[in-house]
Image (tube, rainbow, N blue to C red; front, side, top):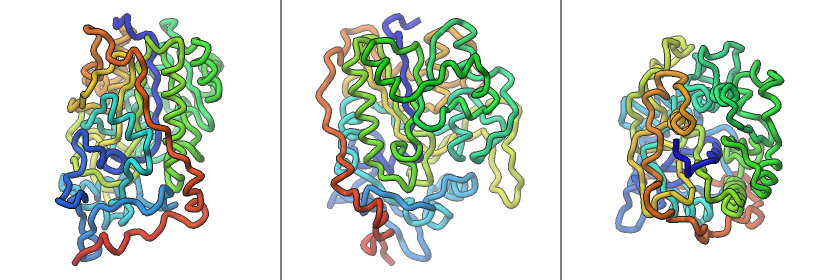
Length: 393
C-alpha cells in the first residue's frame, strides 16, 4: 500500500510535553494567552498560584520535573491537570520554551503538519513508552527497567525481518531495540543496528532502508533534563535537512516526536485508551497511584515531514506511539502486534497522496539554535525557578 511512500523515518526525542515545547506556537491547541501575550495556564503551588513561565535558560534542572508513574498520575489530578507543581514534578513543570529557544523546531512545526492530540502511550517513563513504539505494549513496566520477558507477538522489527522488509535502528548511545535486551543480543537483529552517523551517510547516498528509527545521543541531543534543549533543535535540523537533501526525498515520510512528557505541564487531560493485552502494570497500590494501560499519557509534540504532507494542517485525531506502528503495518500490510495498535489511528490524515505534493520542493526553514550563545547555562544551571514574577497570591 501507499506506493508513493517508500521510506518511513522516525525520530523520537525525550521528555517534553506539547505545551512545554509548542504551547507558544500559535498553531494547534496550545496555550490560551492574555492581553499581554502571556499564557493563562496556572497550577496551585504551596498555597500560591504558579503561572506558566518562559524558562530562564535553555538548560534544565537535573532532578525535576518527574516523569514517574506517581508524579504523572498526581499531575493528572482526576483530569484537572492541576497537580503538576505540587507533585514531585515541582514548579519547573510550568516552564515552557518558545521560538527564541527552538527556532528550527518552531519553523518546522509552523510549516509542516503537526498533531495536537498526539499522546504518549502511557503515563509513565521513557522505557515503557519506547516499548509501546516498537511492540504496542509495555509488558508490565512503568519505570525504566528491563525485565527479560518478551512480548507474545514480538516487536515490529521482527515482523519486518520476517517479511524481508529492510530496517535499521540508528543510534548514538542506546538503540530502542534494547528495550527488550534479549532481542538486542540476537545476531539476526543486531545486524540492523548502526551508528547515527550511518544515517546521514545512507540519506546522502540514497540507501536508507524501508523503516529507519533514529535514536539521538541521550547524553546531549535528546532534550532530556538537565540537557540544553538547543542541542536537540540542532539535531532535529540535521536530520530534516539530510532528508530534504537526499535523493530519496520524493519518497520519504518523516515523523518526529517525543517519548513522553517528562513531567512538564500540559493542559489537555489524556483520554482513555485501548488496553494492549491482558498484562497489567507492575504496581502496588498503595504506595503507587492507581491506574492502568487504559489511559494515554500526556500530549507530546509530533509532526510529519514529507513531500506529501498537507499544507496548513493541524491534525486533531487522537493518536499515540502505536499510531506509528499502525502506519508501518498499513504500509507493508503487516498484522497488528496488540489490541492497542490494532485500534490506533494511522496518521494518514496528515498527508495527501491524491493531489500534487505540496512540498516536493523542500521549503526554506529557519536555522537551528546556536547552543554556544548561551552555553554558560551548562555550568550555571537552569536559572531561578520559578521566577518570582510567576507567583501570585
